[in-house]
Length: 375
Image 1 (tube, rainbow, N blue to C red):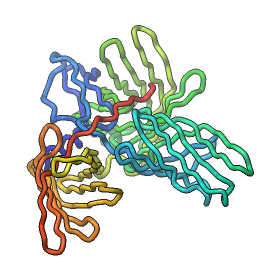
Image 2 (image 1 turned 45 degrees about the vertical axis):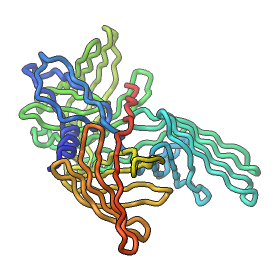
Image 3 (image 1 turned 90 degrees about the vertical axis):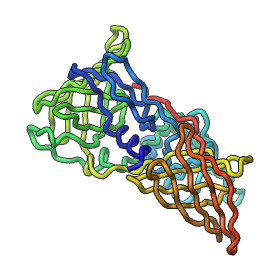
Image 4 (image 1 turned 120 degrees about the horizontal axis):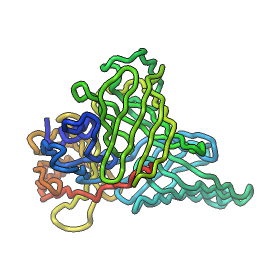
């Protein structure tokens, strides 16, 4: 199994070492790629897991527009962004930019369709996009509404609720859960959480943080404590997961939320595919292209966007060596590259009509998106 994929798996089930059962001393920034961590104790102090490169957040999303929900898809290639909302037959893809966690995309029709224009401006919070949807029609006028784009979870949480046995045994608990936090004003935050086992202890990955507690079939108190912040869940088993309270304390100031955790069908099943994004430099000269590397166990798929045409190679990442073959238009392409702290470096070959051309290639880490959720 490749080192990079082992790291990705550890990020899914990362746990905290130490003798105090309910202290979490590590922080995850979203779903992140990090260097292989050392075995540390709490006495060593907190360690932050920072992503080495951008994690691809393309895929299906729920688009909540003015209280109505529509299926949508987001596709990112570096700063280029495309959003498609299946609202009606006239909504073609909106195209634009995604820079500094700000999404701005637009679609314009011609005069024969009444100069219809649709636009979305939204800010990424580490998981969802919050902003404004605008639809302007020369005949019907303007429609402006708030929009929230929420990723559709591919691995359980947020899917069909699972009926949990009461009281739950320890093996019933791991999996993906939909998490809703509601404050005293009735404002709700919706996100997801992953529960995993560490011996007889429970770890909860939620909100970019790792919580830890002892297992109980009656009440559990997952805890995160770092610096001047301490978070505590009080979780009581329910028919579909857990209910209870969440207390956030910063500098002695407390804020309390109601908690509802619903386990989704399929949670805790197969390992996910992880897609990492790189700047790609061929033959040591500009321009810089965007490449996406998708990993599942030792299998690897690399797609490089060159002049809006995709070079797609499939192969493996074994012993830190990335190799693959595939197609680019009518040409055959292949890669052999060694992983290094900055990404990958190696050789790229392109075959046209029996003529093989070879170039040096670099897959360079991109700045990771580390925007964190509001809570």
